[in-house]
Amino acid sequence: MKTWWKKSMPNSGIAQQKLPIRPIFAKASPEQDATLRQVIQVYGRQRLRQQLKQLHLELLADPAMAKTWDKIRVLFPHDTIN
Amino acid sequence: MDANTLTQLLRQDREKAFRQLYPLCFPGIAKMLQRMGGTYEDARDIFHDSLIVLFEKAVADTLPDVANPKAYLTGIARHLWLRKKEQQQPLLPLENAEHIIPVPSDFYNPGRAVLRTVRFLTLAGKKCMELLEAFYYAQTPLAEISRQFGYANTRSATVQKFKCLEKIREQVKSKNIQYENLVEEIHA
Image (cartoon, rainbow over all chains, first blue to last red; front, side, top):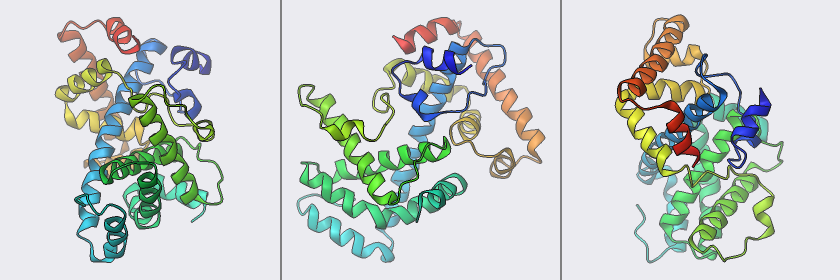
């Protein structure tokens, strides 16, 4: 099973991550299955980016993080910290 | 925080892990990127992408047993920045650091066709995509998925997951999209 995974996506780097090879579509070919897995991964990354942007905004308003943002303002005096 | 603790925390409560890593790592990474010519926005975006790579490594159980996760995260950020700069200026030589920490080579290039497919599948059902993402990408245990999505038990979550896959299959069929073409487009 591992062979098709590495073979089907030789340059993606995904094989290095030892992702589990539990099939998504039971009746699909390994390539079809890998495609859907890749789509879900891209979707997952997009969602995580949105969540991190939200967390960033939340932490900007957190008084406990004031010292951190002061350091950032010193580093980027010409940028708007948002 | 050692690598094992970090892996466990990222798998169990990634938001909590990110909250702990923010004050610990963001200033140092921002300083490094500022020295390498990045703006504040670059620092913020690269830091977020580094956290994503770290999370994926924790989920896939490929986070090495590093003594200093902060230094490791900084290494990921450096790698991502070099990757990004290299894409903007293909003739810029990559430093040796590029080969030290493996980062998925498609991290910044999933391909337009994949993004189009993601949009298409999102239209097919946001909740379904979130469920599949939780199961296959974040590898959240079914019991936790049941709690998050409000299902009565893990059996209901499994059934729902199956229905979601069926729904996607139906969408592909109804739009007359050949799965093989989708594969060709994505890998082209």
